[in-house]
Image (cartoon, rainbow, N blue to C red; front, side, top):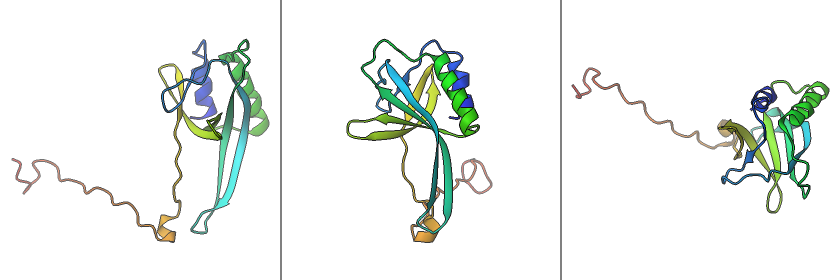
Length: 151
């Protein structure tokens, strides 16, 4: 999800809810402590130089039960960061404190809630580092194609 997408969803909400991948909710009294731009400049295992840019939201669960974040306030924070960091069109990555360490999630939206989605690692240079590409399933012939035997 991009910033423009989250802003469009926020405009239609009275409250903000984030759902973790296990279905539990981030407590209602969370804060968005950071909206920023992260840049990852790296070399993959095949020697290709790559750059990745994302918008970073950090959610923090505080013991501050009296200051729930409202959609219009989050829109304001997003708009400030858009202008300062040139964030248009970038995907959002969400950080949230897990049991032992910060966890990173993707972001989706469904039925009035923001879904924190699991992220996974991957090899970006399978062809260069000796890992065979996954075999694609064979395409089946269309039913009733000549010689298929289904007619």
